[in-house]
Amino acid sequence: MDYVIRRILAVIPVVVVVAVAVFMLIHLSPGDPATLMAGDYATTEDIERLREALGLNEPLWRQFMLWAGRLLQGDLGTSIYTQAPVTDLVAQRLGPTLSIAFLTTLISVVVAIPLGVLAAYLAGGFIDRLVMVFAVLAFSVPVFLVGYLFIYSFSVKLQWFPAQGYVSLSEGVGPWLHNLTLPCVNLALVYIALLTRMTRATVLDVLHEDYIRTARAKGLAVLPVLHHALRNAAIPIATTVGVGIALMIGGVVVTETVFAIPGIGRLVIDAVQHHDYPVIQGVLLLSAAAYVFINLLIDLSYGLFDPRIRY
Image (cartoon, rainbow, N blue to C red):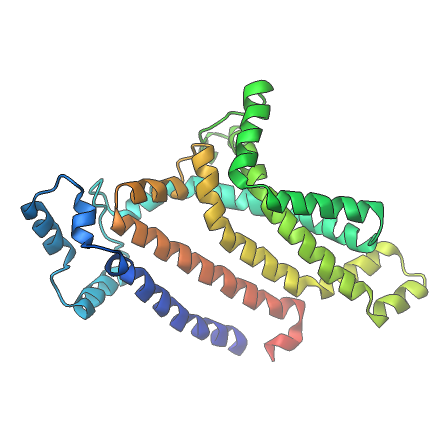
């Protein structure tokens, strides 16, 4: 329990630094923030009213205190473009993005870890080389290019999957999966490549350990040997999974744009186009908080794989 408390307390300074960095987003942008948000056709009176509404006339420290106070109450501000609360906008778009993130992570873990273990066990052979070629290609080809190829092949030509759009899980698991298959497989390719290479490298190192060689010399079956090797290689693999989920934030933006999915990524694109800084701030803050929370969970999971870490 002490280990968990220490890890949670260590996260607090990180969250504070992230909050300060996100708050400074408006003030570090070139030009007057109110002028940028008001648009090209705003009058001087419109810009002044916006400055007053955003509190930009206040000293910087007071602006931060007011913003942090609203943040602690769950208020991420109000969209300049739609006049809707940022929390409502994020809540409306959260479902598609969480669906993509969940399915992509599931596909990546289910495919990549067995591939990495197999490549490590057959290191130097034809299957190992084949897996590595696939990993290099999948990691190198841009996500948007693969997405357009998927749409052309499986939507336009074969008509197996829809080219765009999103169906909520409430309308049925079948339609939900049918609509998300292409975007999730598209995004998963990058993380399968990353996780496969990490799994292969770490399992290969463990397979060269003395206790593994002894177990194999005594005639222990292949599956128990690989099980022990994978368990001892679990920490770097878990780290890679966590980093992959965090990196997925950027990939989701591209994937949602290519497949026209109304998620957080599309919300960010729309906010950037309209200079809607409160929305950009809110999404960045939530994304950073999710990144910190995921890394906290990964840190806590280390104690499950290696009990010595807790001490």
